[in-house]
Image 1 (tube, rainbow, N blue to C red):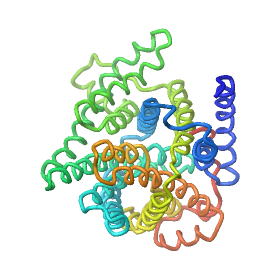
Image 2 (cartoon, helix red, strand yellow):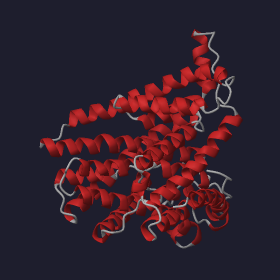
Image 3 (tube, rainbow, N blue to C red):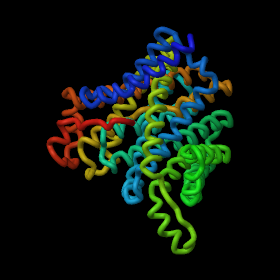
Image 4 (cartoon, rainbow, N blue to C red):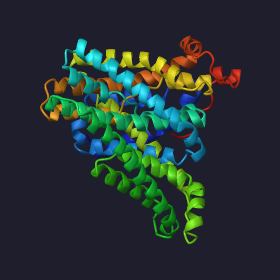
Length: 426
């Protein structure tokens, strides 16, 4: 493709992304859906671009997007909100993962005729939700801070569940038995040590940040440090995503941990991000999110129709079980509109796509089917999330969801019926 045309398209896409955000405020059609459609047209429909043309850059780009999203959202979670929501998020992540994994595994066993261990592995691959989708959509929908925090944390926790447990079942398939103790130990260590890496990184960087600001063009050094923490955690075998999220939470709550440290170390002078730096990272997140969803769209494979249909069926099951999962797991103190949104948000993303490629690489039977059907579930789950949010505002579907969540807190009639204006970015 002509390079001048590519550059012009990138410019048009960025302008279009801002336009789509404005359209969302008026029509409630999520910009995520429109960006995926653009990717579909570029890739599977007209074959102008293929994921293979990106080579190894594509997965790296999606990982960078995930790191930025988790870090930037972490800076917006106050420590008080974290304390009040962590237990709820852990419950929602655990129940959602177990129920989703069970339903997907049963479908893979009965419909796709996969073996029990491989079926459980596929269920674990698709058990969590995607931070790269949940975070920007939550920001656009202007959920309450507690509701957003629960969704952020659920998606980050679910990613760790998926990675550790899916790889555990894959090992069990090769070894012939499940090592539950090893799996549980790895899961616990991934949370604790990754959180420790992120927390210590936040303390260190908050005391160094004022000096970094004196460097010429030094604003991006914070992002570089996030990448460093993510890489260290992953190399050590722990969750880089959790490390990035905890680092963001630490930088966003410098006043809290700074006051604790200053009692023992009076010479320390930690500082957090200023408004200029926050605006800078918000702009980066907006750009990365734009290209991420276009990349998801062009990565969809539509050649194998039976696998596509299986992926569609699995995505539908996931959204059906999501409703009782949220109804059971989420406190009734949450606003009813927020609970309805949470029940419509079960998108899959980067972790599922990466994990689904491993069986094929290792020569597991039905590896190609697992990868292609997972890509289909990722695409359909993001599309269904977008469609359900639109339908909740524009059709009787919203009334059905509100009926299901009878008994949940209602702040005002306006909060249920009138859509709020979306923010300019994210």
